[in-house]
Length: 383
Ligand SMILES: [Zn+2]
Image 1 (cartoon, rainbow, N blue to C red):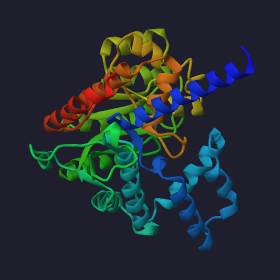
Image 2 (cartoon, rainbow, N blue to C red):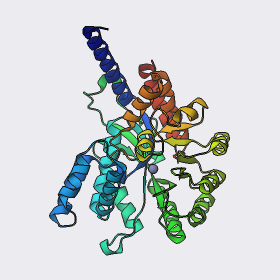
Image 3 (cartoon, rainbow, N blue to C red):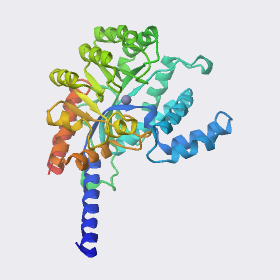
Image 4 (cartoon, rainbow, N blue to C red):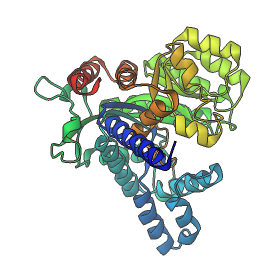
């Protein structure tokens, strides 16, 4: 191939990528695995870090480089976790972060979003798990760039969820509607009692947008038996549960999680052959987080990610970001990665996005409205 032909081929490939990326933004999407803290905008993180530095809490120069970097190492990600931890001891910051995270997801046509967060007790700062959650809920109520649907009853025949048609991307002036629900996370560092508190709080807040329980945190910390009473309590109360599963090869825990049969599972990275078989026969929907898994070492590479195996086995799946801010990704980008890595076409991506509707924790009214969104988008997008 001569230089001219090579340049033409490169230009065509670039054009194709641009088209697919735009299409992935236009695609209505359902996000089921997004941690509040890890989804903070870099610009906000930078601004808040500067404020903390002015107060003498941190040294700005220590974190500036990490915040501004794209493609952070795992070690650098942990530095940001420390920063998130300090930031979320302030109620106003929690509310602001929540507002912005919802606006960012809405901006890329996410029509249904489940945000998960760990309610925190911090006596020194006058924060209780309840007051932390009040701040999150306040954040949802102050969203301006999109209309947030927090209750099933807010959906009616004249008010349905909307997303931006492909033809209007860029020049869109209509206010989008995004359905948002909250999951309360049990942190693996917590005691049984603290975990039970979180489940009871979820029950108390079920009329304020809280619909589920998550188990997450450092996968090498804690024992399954510690959280089991709280998870069983949630099950008895009829609260849907999702569990981070197989982030490390903890055979005993992976077995126990699969036996527990939660409504959804996150990641499922380090499963052995028997566990794969068990997972596939269980048909428990899996929240797939490609970028996150590759960056944290849960998958060796995008090409070798277990998405392909599960997708080919027709296992129920939904693409998710995990921590869009931390890993410098977006849900649209995760869909693009599936197309560019595994060769899925637009029709397959559309189906993948649409299938996720069936795995949401919200009720039938919401599912019905979401199915309508996809029906309306189908003609334009499924090509
Ligand atoms: Zn996660």
